[in-house]
Amino acid sequence: MMAALLISLGTTKVGVMQGEVEKPITAPQALAGTALVNQEPLASSQLAKRTVTGYSSDPSQTDNTPFITASGETVHQGIIAANWLPFGTKVRFPELFGDQIFIVEDRMNEVNRSKVDVWFPSKGAALQFGVHRTTVEIL
Image (cartoon, rainbow, N blue to C red; front, side, top):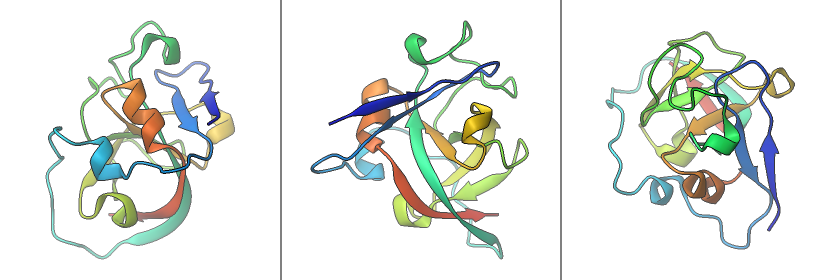
């Protein structure tokens, strides 16, 4: 297994992604035991195919405020980092998380301008999540 660190300059968070793994853990398994963001009925939306990775508040992956996002929020389940969407945008990843709703509250390094980074409570969970190319449903 090969892991890579996405370095984030001038932002609150960085993303951790993992290359190919023999048996990648599914998104719900990585979040087992954690609270989900409010679930809402499916609405008319826009779809985009994006690369989705995971990150955490591990001090080796962040600036000097590892638990505060670029928007000023404290990290919690359901936060994502995405440079291509405004703060507060709600999205879903139906293929990975079903109807769970995530909110853009963080940013990534500009080199990752078209990706999405999902916050996980631990570095291990972020690494287990790995890298996915999936549909992002913008609500």
